[in-house]
Image 1 (cartoon, rainbow, N blue to C red):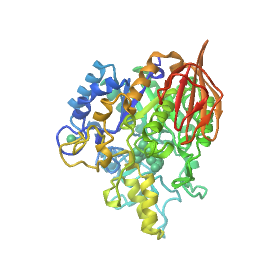
Image 2 (cartoon, rainbow, N blue to C red; image 1 turned 90 degrees about the vertical axis):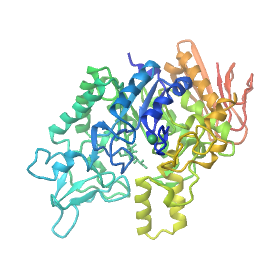
Image 3 (spheres, protein in one colour; image 1 turned 135 degrees about the vertical axis):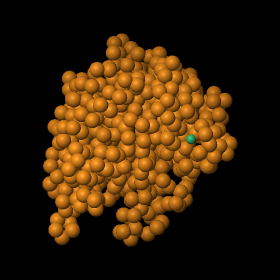
Image 4 (cartoon, rainbow, N blue to C red; image 1 turned 180 degrees about the vertical axis):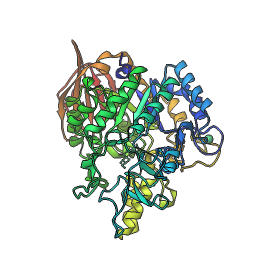
Amino acid sequence: MEWWKDAVIYQIYPRSFQDSNGDGIGDIPGIISRLDYLQELGVDAVWLSPVYQSPNADNGYDISDYREINPEYGTMEDMERLIAEAGKRGIRIIMDLVINHTSTSHYWFRRSRDKTSQYADYYYWRKGGADGTLPNNWTGFFGEECWEFDPERCEYYLHLFAKSQADLNYHNPAVLEEVKDILRFWLRKGVAGFRCDVINILWKDSLENGKKQLALTGSEHYLSLEGTHEILRELREVLDEYGAFAVGETVFVSPEQARALCGRERKELDMVFSFEHMECDQFLLKWFKKRFRPKVFFQCLAKWQKELEWNAIYLENHDQPRSIPRFGSETRWKESGKLLAALALTLKGTPFLYQGQEIGMLNFDFSRMRQLNDVESKNVERVLRKFHIPQKLRWKIIARTSRDNARTPFQWTGEEGAGFTKGRPWLGINHNCASINLAQQESDPDSIWNWYRDLLKLRRDSEVLRRGDFALLEAGEQVFVYQRILGEKRLSVALNFSGEQAEVSCRGKVIRSNYGRESFDGKLDAWEAVILE
Ligand code: TEU
Ligand code: CA
């Protein structure tokens, strides 16, 4: 029945959504207390970033027990209550499935240190060279080496992410069987599906040296290989037992590779998060920013719209800086926030909204490293130091790219603690919460939040917006104009990504305008979005 094609999915980063007990950490009872809010906003499903037991080296993306809830977030009973309470409100729960690696605190890893144990081959263990060289020349995602020596086993283990995130060895069939059991465990509890973390790198074909590259040396040995497709087809069989859904986070994929991962006939994933549009303002790596050129962004989005039958649409998540300062304008916060909402909710595909996006939250206002938590930012700081990059430049690089930009607590109110916590928040709350907060926006009919709510309703009521084909009309330096077409029905969307007026050739009856205009003569104001019939 492909319910996800008509759905809008809301991502919750549990640590930062709602604290219920004053310890400064968001939790599951907190999420439950906000289900009415999500229903009012009008979303159909929630993707929960990981809530499993974890030592939190990477905030839950380092899992130490897939069948336990992190006590900071609550209990298994809380989780079951969340699934049930969400269900009562017509909201499905999607779990984050992190199966490329586990925490080194997982008992599989701990036992894997013993070469005679049944877990000995659950990970990639290798000897280094006699002269102290690492098993190969690969480099990891977090800007560091990806081999760590374990004194107990006297071997190195592979970790493409942080040191305490050891990559699982899918050459050992027992690993996949474990994963299938984990899927069943959660599907039996009633979750609707999974967001599959870095799912296109599961299979490593060999551990030979890679071709030297500026980043991710070795990646030709694991990016989107046939072995991964085979794993996904096995997982799909389990998902199908429950009619469950799967979206894959897929790094460095081309449209062709994406089709091979989520084409209907492939029986693997339902859709993928691609990254190309998120790379428009960077040069090789996210740490090297280049000027954002709307045209490049539009062309990229249009390309993916054309090349894929169905896309997962997103402008924000817990790994990316906020979208307004990035693709819009902080000085025209409200207009550009609404413009980005119009983009996210009128493309063809399943929109994923990230918590706080619906009230136009901005990047953090920290001023020093000490205020950050993100393991990636800390590693990069270390690497930049090693290369003697001066402090000022280091901070500049990290401040605009750090993942903590999206991880500051949700701004429910303008009070101290932002309605997020009565205690000391685990990560600093942005001082702009005095003006940017939900309470204010709920009471303001012209707010970004009310605009999101309105567009969500428009989408629910409009089959052409949900299912219609995409046709590009214009991808210019400032304007993005496209149509959604279903049979005789046709909607045009015109977006001006600039602070200057712009002209477009499409006309029609105004359905929505973020300037509240009633008729349209082809002239768009600064950061204006119009939807025409
Ligand atoms: O992200 C994978 C991933 O590609 C990002 O980490 C990306 O490399 C990075 O953000 C660039 O800055 C997933 C999760 O979304 C992320 O939160 C985890 O840290 C990572 O996997 C490891 O599990
Ligand atoms: Ca708490």
